[in-house]
Length: 317
Length: 264
Image 1 (spheres, one colour):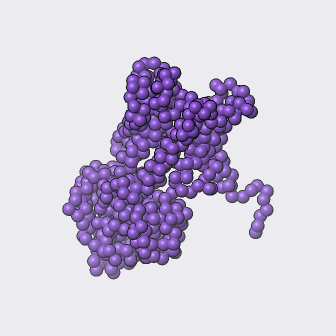
Image 2 (cartoon, chains in turn brown, green):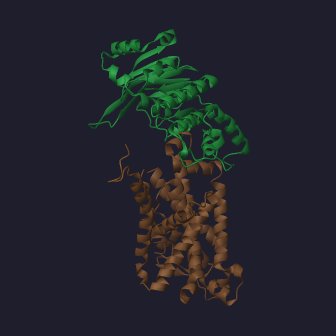
Image 3 (cartoon, helix red, strand yellow):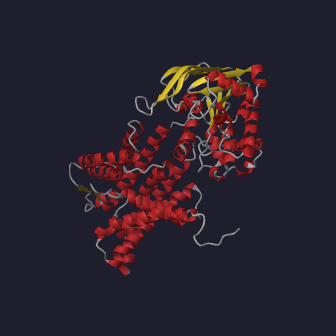
């Protein structure tokens, strides 16, 4: 139990970082109504671009921005495969994801993982977030403002603020209309195809940004770091919805719910690992089962409520 | 205003399901014409409207709205000139968005969507006044999600959205067919009022012969992808359902019209 509490700050930090990715998933899955599987690849693209650029001496902000742009490019790729080539969205995402596997390896110089040298204190100080800062803050050698929870929390608030503004603009509203009803959107002169590309671009930009933050946090990028990212994203979106849909109606709060959902997911996973001592290789299976159950609940609910008359029920004449 | 010249459209060409939906259709609507379109199932009514709206491209022929040749323009670009209401009440509005957001989207039809705010305070006040015209109490529910509205309310809202920015051409695709008779009458009445007020050039498909006769200054009957009848002016005013059936029989050489047309 003590060890579990000790791991909480780390779990919450990770949850917040993945939360930004989950907000990206929210854009495609909830707003655009597209299940975009690009994220499993673009998450790593962000991490790879960041680590390689930062490792070669680039400014940390510049490296983050480059990761964001790289992610956007992957979204555009999926978007064009879907809209220009007419490939179903889910397959377009899978194709991009597959292609990205090679591209990500190429970015990392054909190595499966690349590390940031954090034993060099000068290098470490340049980072915005790091696993080591969690311990440093606990020891008191670093101020709380350098704690990953604080720093990533600020990134999350900034992300939500920007998205809240964007989806309130004419363009953002047309994007929401594209996801809500394409026929209506086109009849109102909205270029639905372009909007889908735009939404995928935005989403994968955030996903890659989140990947860059994670690789910075754990001080390495790994070719398989994005594996199952879409499932974690969906888990966060769904947990946020189940817990807060009655409470949060405002769009910004809904995005916040996604981020909180992601934190809860990581804390729960951490609890399972710490308290049950289960082999961590089973984590992906547990994730898959949890998400499957949460996705099934609304469907089961709808089915059981739509039954008109119970068998054996009284007949009111 | 609308000039359709010799358009053809064949679906599933070269397969056993090949269907010539539009077979050399030409039609010219003058500014302010209100034409009703009737015809049996599969006669090509909806296909004609979809061809004009640009849902897909026609195989040959040309379509102009005003001075603009729109034949090769995609749907979203034609929307600048066209207001549309669909048969399915779910199709014309975004259910997960608010009433005022739907109106704001419609107010920007055919304009560039920028990073300016999606709906201004001034617009909200305008929409409040506009929704009063519908007499459905929607003006008090500006921020309600459209998904909460009834089919009739949604069709009335879609009609308002289609005409919020005066369109050069209004396309109504059996927009009252999915409503109960009382609601249908009310939506049709609102349609008539808006079309008269804004002097809109309109093409309205209906299944109901009486509606087709009562409304508009022109009546077009379609049969097997062609225009079988085109009645306007004084002849249209004097028209009765019996006349129409007789004329349809003469024009197409069949008497199958009765059931197909009267039902529904």
